Amino acid sequence: MSNDAKPDLRSALPPDDALRELLHNEVHARPAARIKLPALLVYIAVLNEGVTRAEECAHLRLLPGQSELSDAAMQDNFLRLRLDRCHVKWERHSEFTRYTVVQPLPQSAWLGSVEPELFSALRVDAEWLRGIPGRTVAAIKLALVEHDISDPQSLLELGRQWLGGRNVVASMLGQGHSIALTGFRLLPSGFERMLVIAPAGLGESRAGRISQRLLELETYRLMALRALPVAKSLAPMLAASESGLAEITACLETKQETEQALLDRLIHVAASVERATAEHMYRFSATQAYAALVRQRIDELREAPIPGTQTIGDFMQRRLSPAIATAAATAQRLAALSQRTERASSLLRTRVDIATENQNQQLLAQLTRGQQLQLKLQTTVEGLSIAAISYYVVSLLLYAGKALKSAGLDINPEMAAGAAVPVVLWCVWKATQRVHAKLYRDD
Image: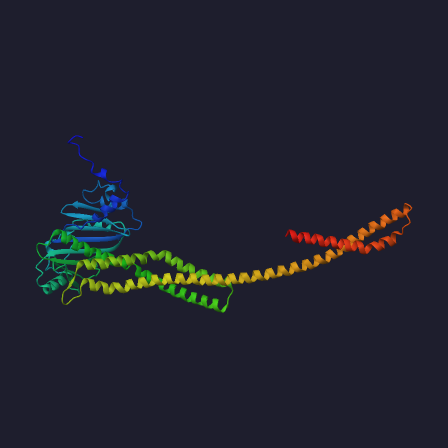
């Protein structure tokens, strides 16, 4: 082999599984951005039901310099586009799509300003944001600024002014590398605001991870809460179904209604429960998954409390946990009601089976009585048949006697026929018994 030839490094492996490369690269999907402080992130998450990648790609092409963007570039569900002194990040998930604009924070919005106006400094046209395909589920303006964090109490007051003087929740993140503040309030603009304060020298990668966790935390919280209105809307139906099922079970016990009437009522209850299960069980399952992600992101923040305010994790869990518990309880009620309906159906089916068996027994009894009557009738007919056959045999003997008398034989045909009657009856009766015996032997 030539010294210049390079060995095929893959020749020592069996053929790749079709999903190997895709699954391997999943660990590198949606990497956190590298963010240089001070920075402003304008984040919008929209529900993508009914929105195709082609529509999202067409919207991204409206950005300056992106007219040549191809659909193939969006197949990995993640895309970062570099624009003039900013970049736009696109991420598509199963239920929502996220758009993030990362740009420098204008000096007028640095720490010390009071509820600064941010839209005028936006590097992306506001009309482009308004035209994003989908329905908004989360919209956040996140500012990351540099400042000494040795005095958290004074920073808490500065952060409260930056957020508009309202009550805020805040916490020290990680091993004290930054402070995060937010009010979790929708402003008239439709956006929430978050503020991260970090000392000079915070790494760009760490800043990207902090922003990613905070933005995902709020998005997953809102997605988890989507099951709460569903749970509240199902409460009257569940109460009515449980009451109706209890009445059906009571009627099964007391036999106050017919099986057909009970079956109609039970089918109505079962159909309502199964329809609700088919329409909403995915939402309840998704809520549990999103709630788990919220808890995970809170753990990843590694918060430490700042005296005078709640941590972000405590604030969120206290308000999120009741909603998650309500959704979980509703899902359990649906599952339990479905099982109880199945058990009531089994009881009703057993009752119908017993009634059917009783009807079958009565029918068999009627058939048995009919067969007995038929047997008696057959016995009577057989007796008449013996008499009829004997009559014809005796008549033949009488004719034979008359023929012999006409031939010159000295015989009295009537006397001979009368004497033969007992013999003929006995012979016919014996022949009938032999026929019966043969039939029974064959059976």
